[in-house]
Length: 321
Ligand code: FES
Ligand SMILES: [Fe+2]
Image (cartoon, protein in one colour):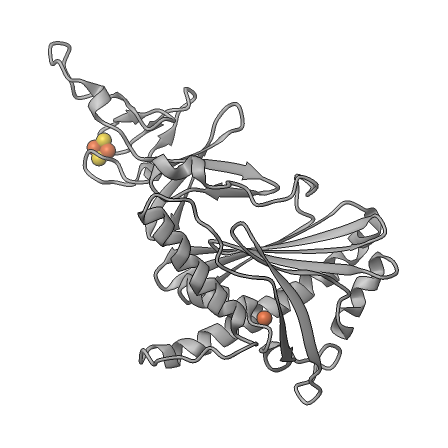
């Protein structure tokens, strides 16, 4: 079992004998000690380290050792909160909202074709809110400045970009297009590679690059840890062997990029500490505007208990980068 903070809540993750992942609130309802300080028993129950109360994987209390035989106590009154979760393609998706709404949420965003194990995984902590992490990672105008390097980009050579976007059920996507000159490396997949980038609430970016019958998927997820800390996972998937020899290089490049973003976000906090009003301009920041718009729209729909209808429309965005 392992404990992890998500959205300000301590969560205990367990793996059952049938290899299912279960998530419980990592706080003993008796006197508050983390359940993760206790034991995972062969029965699949968790035993609290303080007074030995036990909880099953549905969160129900199954044993209170201090009760005497003649003390009639209804254990079913005691329950630890559980969270619906699903393990897929090397990641665990957890639903933190009201459990009653869990069925309404598309749990896994991944296309069926994605392999069950990622070929490459990266994790990084950004010292910022989930909003700034999402906006920072989807922002198309920072590339030439934050990611400049002799072999990749130069801030003095900007190109005009023009991309078509379409709404999706929970977000939007940059429709399939040939990658720009910076994406020359995609040719490794074969002639005429195409890329599609989609963003989905709450903070999921999926890039699909394909040519002929070869496909690479790049999945980036942004998880709020606290109000001021976000966890970034970047997972890449491919099925063909040829690319695996480049894995150390791809890992190094991906890590370098993510570290550059992390550095920018870290510096940004110095200014954000003064709570300034910020500017989002067209078209470079339009995706950021969309993010805030659909996030609010989704929350409003949930509050009113009506289905979320994406208000975005198809359009073309242009920017220099
Ligand atoms: S605090 Fe967990 S059993 Fe008492
Ligand atoms: Fe970036």
